[in-house]
Image (tube, rainbow, N blue to C red; front, top):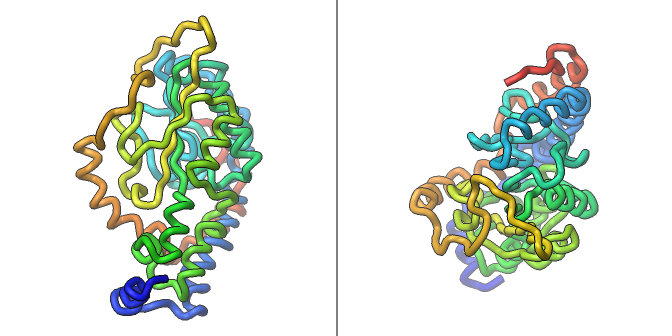
Length: 311
């Protein structure tokens, strides 16, 4: 680390947690409690699978050639898209679905697919399997847009050449601990730089794979989350047309060059989003969160949690 960076960290950074404070306020929530939440969500989602598979068929019929999928939507709901994720109380989904089961949609039925901070939660083999499912489900000319934590930028920041760690993960007992969170927090199981993500997507069957900037790309208006912009690597993959095959008709522009600049609206949102980003990597957001997750686990198979609710 350069002397300039060392001095900046020492003088400008907020006070660091002690190790005990860090384990209590940050680590426990993001590792142990997150794991408990994942178990509860998986149980609830598995219980709903037969109902949700039928709902997926209805959504596919309703969406027609304009079907757009938002995979691993978390707490970000995109109107006009089919938002899929594990069950989590208080979070809106169009389809409660475990993506490790594949995609419950027919071949070549989807116009475009986006996922933001999903693939790092899957082991590499499961990530490849999901990418292959995306290729299967996309129509010819369809686009898969993936955003993941940018491993290259995190490495550069750890080495002292980028302020990302100090901005998004302040107050950690050491820079090594802050850097390691990328690999051990939030149920992360993989890490990607642009080369690795491109290798995975080509192995899944995509021939056209391109890096993209936040807010840019073939899918407009951009589905990217401004609060994720600083730490996110975006890559787009296009399902190319087999020789002689016609392009699928659809309501989304997925063919041709990506737009040349960040949309004006997206640019306006980035600054505000950066201010919010640190909250994703800080203290536990809700002092009662652990109790809530235990309650979900205990009620995982309760009838009122697995009833089908038609939309």
